[in-house]
Structures are given as structure tokens and as C-alpha cells.
Amino acid sequence: MNTETHLHRGIITDVKASELPGEAWNEFSNAPFEFEDTVLDLWEDTQKSYYHACTANRFSESYLTLCTQLEKNIRQLGSFCLTKAVLEQKGIACPKLSDLSIRELVGMVSFHLRKAHAAFDGIYRDNNILGVTYLNWEFRWFGLGNRLKATEVKIRKIKDGNLNVDSMLEQAETFKGEGCTNNTPALEPKSLRAHSSALPLSGSVAREMIRQEEAAAKREKAFRKDIEDAAKIWGQKFDWQEIDRMAEIEKQRQAKERERSESASCSAQESEEGTITEAEARKTLIEDAMSRGDQQALMDIPREDQYQLLDRWNQYLERIEKEYEASHHHPGGSGSRGGPSDEVRKALREKRKRKKRG
Image 1 (cartoon, rainbow, N blue to C red):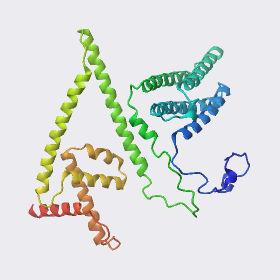
Image 2 (tube, helix red, strand yellow):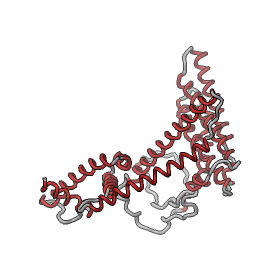
Image 3 (cartoon, rainbow, N blue to C red):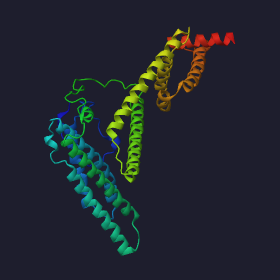
Image 4 (tube, rainbow, N blue to C red):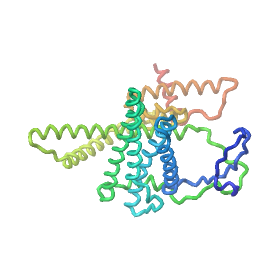
């Protein structure tokens, strides 16, 4: 590795970007980033951005640009403060992040809330014009400040031991302590995977699942509040702990009932010669959607009932049969290479039998 550029200093030059020399492929370590060191870098960079936003003229275009970036940084750093509290609650100290706190972030927000108000007030007083952009920033800073304060409340609950932090800790500790893998001499890095969309596709599915869970939680919270408000009129109070316990018992009972029903259904399907089970069909369809990068299908297939799944399965068989026949009869086809899986071959045979009987 070239140690002369270890400081990674930037330069001002008249040289065109296309004429700049290349860099070593292993100039930087590819060891999985760890929480404390990475957040320290982001915190220091944000402090630089904050300084320039503070000193920039409130009426300049550059100030508004800095505000946009600073708002994003502060929001993310608030999340880091929450993670830091979780780690510390588990006995994992983060001494490098001692200066990072919700109080510091609220101070940054408060400064620019007042600066945006001053800009709005100045434009109105001097020009009798409403500076809507600055008014919008006043409310954005105010909203972010309230979110940070709510985060501080959660942090205090974590410190008091009133919140379960195990799941939050698992993400922060992922890959901790692992070294880099690109520190050995090599002419060039390994080729990238052909299916480059796999990671963002999985990420999109995960985000959609999280969004649905959060929406369900909000609906549940609103529902409980409506019930409690109505109960207060009659001087009643709901024991949500007991209600949740009874609901969990009913949930487990329904799950066992579905399991028995699905088991009986699978046994009946398996006994029919030449067919495959619903679970096998669903698995095959999901694998097919992944290979085609069909994000919508990946989200729909697990939720479809047996009738919707049957329609999708029949469409899949039609497509596979056409592709299979084309590969064997077309002069440029793939011949005997690849072809459908054993499950699909079995389903295709059964489909042909039904056609003959019909």
C-alpha cells in the first residue's frame, strides 16, 4: 500500500479530473467499519459543516445548501446517540464519543432555528416580503429539535433499564473486530457479482416490511388511545397487560390451528401423484422472482392465498414451458443445458396429463 498518501490530503489544481493519476485498489482498508471510529469521523465532519453554516451569510444560497446537509447529519447523529446509549447500557464504553450527545445536537438545531427566524424577520421588515423558504426551515428545525428531545427521553429510559436493548445491540456489534481482506498483494480485485441488484433489492424488501410494521404499531397505538379516551368518560380503566396476555394466548391457538390445517393440506397434496405442495410452489416462485429481480413479486408471493398462488403458479408454468420448448427446438437454443427443476418438470408432466385427459 502507498503510505505516502496516508493523510489523504485534498489539493487545488488546474489538472483535469480525467488526467489525475489512479489510486491503488487497496488504498483503503475494506475491514467492516465499526461503530465508535466511524461515528467519530461523522461527528467531526458534521462539526465542520456546522461551523461553516454558522458563519455563512443567512441570506446566501450556500447557507441554505449547508442547512440541507446539516439537517440530515444531525438526524442521523441523533440515532447514533441512541445506539451509544445501548452499548453503554451493556457495558461497552465509547470514550471517543464522549462529546457527542443529544444536548449538543439540540444546541446546533436551536442556533439555526433562531438564525432562520432572523432571516425571515429581516426579509419581511426590510422588503415586506414573506421569505417562505426560511419559514419552512424554522418549522423543520423545530420538528427536528422535538425528535431529538424525544430521543433523549428514550435514552434516559434505556439508562434506567426500562427498555430492552438486546436487538439494538445486535446490529451495532455486527462484524465488530473483523480485519480487512484486501491487505495482500493482488493485480486486481475479484470480479463483481453478476446480480448487482441483489443487495438493494433485499434492502427494499426489508424497508417495506419495516414500514408496514411501523404503520401497524401506529394504528395499534391510536386504537388504544381512542379506547382509553372513551373509557375515561365512564370512569373505567383498561388493563392492557391482561388484554395483551389473552390476545397472545388466542394468537398461539390460531397459529396451532393453521399449522394443523396446513399439515393436513400438504399431506393431501403430497398424496396426489405428479403434484407438488403449496410450500414447494411458493419457494420456487420466490426463487424465480429473485433471479428476475422482480421486487413486487417478492413482496406479494408470501402474502398470497392459495387461489392467488395457483394463478401465479399456472402463469409461471406457461412461461417455463414456452422457454423450455424454445431452447430445445430453436437452432441457437441452449439444448440440454439447464432446464426446469425437478419440481417444475413434475408439475409440467402433470399439466400435460390433464390436457390429454381433457
